[in-house]
Image: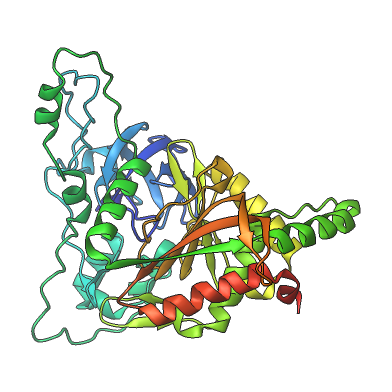
Length: 431
């Protein structure tokens, strides 16, 4: 029986993507592990590997199609002895549609008979190939008890063939409802028609939202509505850091290393999370997860959005190592070449707009993080010294946005004070 190839979930948050390019054509022989297509997620273009083998019988979704939902049928694979005549009408080619308006998003092709709903394990969808589902059904296997060896834990043919039959649970739990956070977030405020009518008669251009912008709109709207933010602010004097940085850069010049203020901020935050370990945590629904290591995410602006690559074990790395890693991550982020594991995770984030001349701002927490540090520009300001003398110093304003479910006021204050102490006494960060 022909095997339906489904749109894969290439990241935990992916709900739809763009089928950018097919690397095989109808009639080609496909083996498990072969690269079949390039798929654009909201963050990057990734390769899609085959998990079954056979002959490409029919391509359902042509390359360049946007908004293809996860688990939609995108192609049909034929097994030995099968031909194109065996392909069921359950997966027809998308019907031609009337030309859409310039600003309309072309809907993803849908199968007339969708694949069976995937089972769930602890409320999370279990992904399995259609062939694996059929074999599991024949053998009486419960897919929620099988570990998948395919991409992102997908259950494939070999997994179910090697599994032993087990009794199914007496009462199957109701499948988890698909999150409506993204559509709800995008629909917040007046409807599209109302807004367009408001500006009727005025020249404007409709700009279609790409996957990244849709995700940013959905996730941050959800975060602002559901995460109980509170904000802590401090001014940090940078004179000692700027002097120390200048000395280090002069010594590191033969090695081609140039440290930025942001490198010191990353190190200061990573060490502060070790000094206040209760704050090194994330919200996990009905519990918090507290971490031993400091994995710090740093916002990187790219065209049309942003990435937050994560520097893992940042407290253990030297300033020069952090600098080199951050430069590499930022470069590949702007080229959209980061893998999901490089921009997912972390417990704490940094957003630095000081380089754009912003004095101070409040950042939105990116769940499940418990805090994000908004960094402003270092500017010269009058300072009253310890002896009461008025001097001029370089002062940087920072705001710590905190999730009150994870971090209370006093703990947040201690965390921010630790960051301030590290930056105002930079030599201690090398101890």
